[in-house]
Amino acid sequence: MFGPRPRRIIGTPAADLPRVELQARTGNVVAVRDVDFDVAGGEVFVVMGLSGSGKSTLVRCLTRLIEPTAGTVRIGDVDVTAAGDDALLDLRRHRVSMVFQHFGLLPHRSLADNVAFGLEVRGVDKAARRAKAEAMLELVGLGGLGTTRPDQLSGGMQQRVGLARALATDPEVMLFDEPFSALDPLIRRDMQDEVIRLRREVNTTMMFITHDLSEALRLGDRIAIMRDGRFVQVGTPSEVVGAPADDYVENFVRDVSRSHVLPVESIMTPVDGADGDGYCARVPLGTKVRDVMGRLAHHDLPVGVVDGEGRVVGTVDRVAALRLVAGEDVIDVAEVSEVDG
Image (cartoon, rainbow, N blue to C red; front, side, top):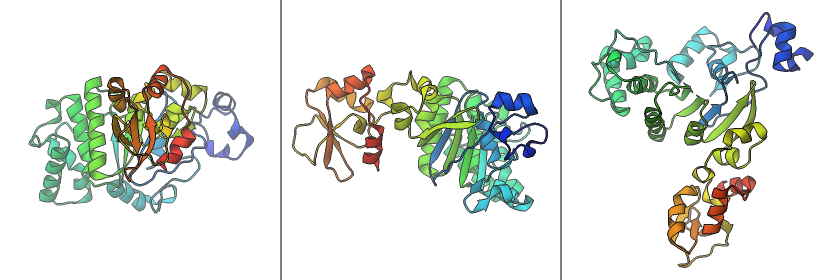
């Protein structure tokens, strides 16, 4: 909460007032209200919403770049909200890295020195941090450019340097605050590919802030939709697209091609371990519907959906796929989640 003496409002009836009314009565603005969530190790958790929804404030509260007015933040075994200066400094230097929308590179330093800056602050010796910086530049596709200055790079390449800098400290958690929103669409997609690849290679826990739904669907294991400081819905991409919690979320996902998001189990007809040759192809659970459309278009036989042990647990035919593309509501997200589980 921002404004005059916000702590005096916590726990009073005024705290429950709508945002506009609270501001009119007290002069305080609530940026984040009643948000409660957990992020699993190795997960990419995406928070998305329109400008002013509170998402950037939320991510800054996690390392106390903004001090939470009330509540508790825990990262691993650290109670961030109760941490003293030394513990907070250790958390920021060793366990959590952040990538911002604005690159924040030091223009008078080389790329290698920019990437190694966090290690320099830690007191790591020059040779070790130089080697680490070169390795991180190689990881993000900028190998051999360590002596280059930031102003010699494009915006997308500069953001890669910011990503390399965040990775150089081997963080447990990476926080992204709309890092690609200022980039051109093609460069933005390249950077999304980079995050997907790095996530696969380094398996770091990530929290990603964006206002772009396609970006959220592409990157997130789970997505939180935020509005007026609150979480409206939290779920997998399939759950958010297939079963919007309310009209607000439904408006967000209205133009999404559901075949690009929903897995084949959302439209399959379950079968009990059937086998045989009556399929034009077999695909694993979790395959996106769009990835079987080509086969269904050229064959009359259905696609068999197999579990982790190779058993056919369902079939998808041309009619089911066309119904999904046509927008008919044939999805039971609860059943999909149960199959995934």
